[in-house]
Image (cartoon, rainbow, N blue to C red; front, top):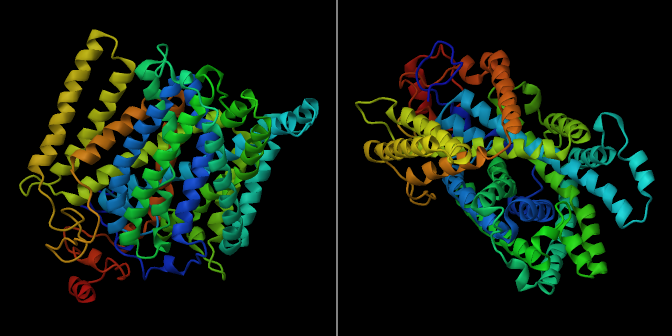
Length: 578
């Protein structure tokens, strides 16, 4: 938990402003007409709708066949393991920022900024990816269902220079305009679209069930794909789970977040996984997997079964309601920028709240960035990078829970931090060897050795690092010493559960294309350079003081205490705390 960029300090840094219950923090003054429960339902149905149309058919056709249901189940297991870690952290640290806040509290400033960069991939670039795919799909709908000539569509919608997609730009600008009008107006729009999606989702599943044939499920795992195809499909399916931490990013606007956040996360994951599996099973039952469309699964399946009206209805529903996913994706980014700006890591410009209580500056800048990406970057260039970035965020969050729950042995300072770092390295290397080098004898032997090292590291953490008396680990605390709040959700099997989640995330990560991994590396490198060029110089912690060598050990127990200048005497600090 050494903080990179901490001027003149080499010890642990815990930033008071990001920790604890922010009921009295300034984030509470941001107007929120869109309630927390409504946001949870909105995220759930929006991403379910998008993944049902775009991912299930793709995975069934190209990776797993009818075993796409197994791919969704495995992705659900991996997401739930990380979700359990999120649930405890969200209850203990119910503040805006999601992974950013958790990693900041547990590991430090630079890793937290990397996590924030990963969240930006989710909130902004995933919105751009959905907008781009909708723009492409809208052109197809005009030709196939609306009766327009393909020549006109090619000339006016697809023939622009630099790959510009006018409809992707239009839907992105429309989403931005809705958010600029205010959250009250956004609520009206999102409620309407959510009801429309609900009706179409249940129609699609119920109608598809009447057209299912048992013969379409044989073979369940096609021989040409095998179990590795199912695993690759799991990576693509994981895109369907990347949005649930948006619930955590909105934590500052939730009622009773310590109770409701863990419940919302786990309930959402359970419902999403069940419906993904059900929808995929229905789709595979309607057609042989070889005939399933990779871009418009259900509409095409209805059409091939002679249900023309159902095909037209679902196709129209896809075009009509999918834009809400763009709106939902962008909704959390201004809150993340607010948290970063309050900590001095991005300009204070992003923390300004207008007279109506809206984060206008963050909304406009984030929205314009999304519009640019959606307009010029194809969908297939974005999806793998998004999944990879979020998998890294999940792993950082899983590691954060271990560091917050456990402590290093008294005679081995920073032993826990070193061990969890080693575990992450061994997990990534083992996953890479299994996916890319397991065919050779050398690869098999190396995988066995790495598996042994990884297991021993996890066991070393479990049996040598005792549980901390306070949530927060050895170097920070939440609540009175020796007190463990029984009402808080507690993840079971720590550190085994978060360590397993870290390995599964690594396994999914290394299956992505090498080009996507390279782009991801360059993206995070740029984020790190920005941190050292701007963030480290303007950081609130670096300018107003960290908890150094235990002198400010109680600051984190009073979340309303402002930053204390470095010149403040220790007696004054203790007086302020008490």
